[in-house]
Length: 158
Image (cartoon, rainbow, N blue to C red; front, side, top):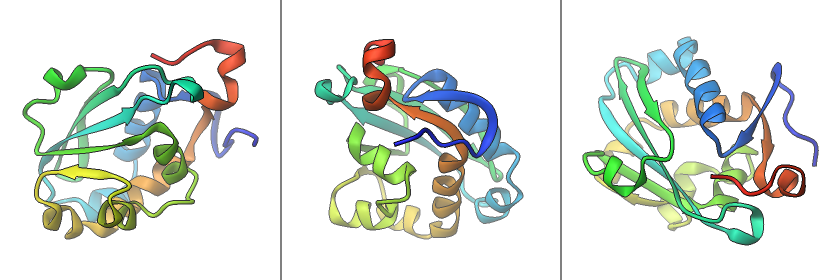
């Protein structure tokens, strides 16, 4: 499968700090997200669970802070201790996250079905379905290559 080539010429490897930074730039330039999430205030930890056979040898924890329709900060690979204060923890194997980014898995359905494990008050997240949909749409716009598709060329992700 060819990498997404929707926005910009640079291709970011998912998961990576570079990918997360590109994603945050898109979030913070989105008027749609700003409107949908204007009252959402939370810290969210995203956990990309290891799948060694797909080039992700260890869990990767990312910590984000949202408020006033913006992503105020995002930190890559903070470990569980770096996400201790998160309002929500959303975790899934790397391949599930890839499926969400590629539009094959709906994140809300994934949360309800348990494919995406959520720690925190799920009804609060469900209140912001429009913002969640916009986050997924923006993730798909990051010009991405995926760890399992480029593993032989660049090694394992960390």
